Length: 177
Image (cartoon, rainbow, N blue to C red; front, side):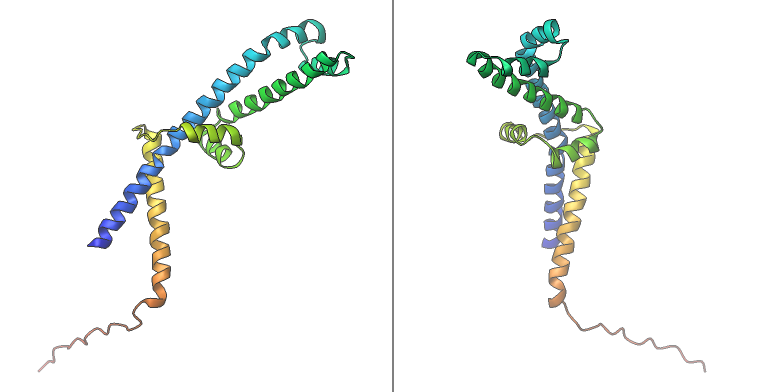
């Protein structure tokens, strides 16, 4: 009986963990988009300058600043270069978060920006979404966690299991007289 309750608790835990996945993905995507918009706003003046003098090429603008003999311009080249790099990173992250759900999960698990991921994790508040994808994630995670834990426990119990086989009592067939 206790084992049944433990299984239920484990399933419920997996369910609650699983429903967090879509919420976390959504929070990360919103954070990326907010940073991307802020980055675009920071670069808007430089983009205008690049459009007027360098056919819109920000890299050429940065190169021009770097090649200047003015130390202020050279310092600005580093600052603008960092803004351009950050904007490119955020654009790449934004595109990754607009793909299919499995692509988003894979991106978050393998290639997400560490800083943005840490920010999202720090600000994330657990929530129970009742959206279909959250329910599907919850059930899938619950079943997977329950299966993994039960399999591990069964493997661990294997050496200690009873080695005796139960012998079924022989059936007596009625004799014909």
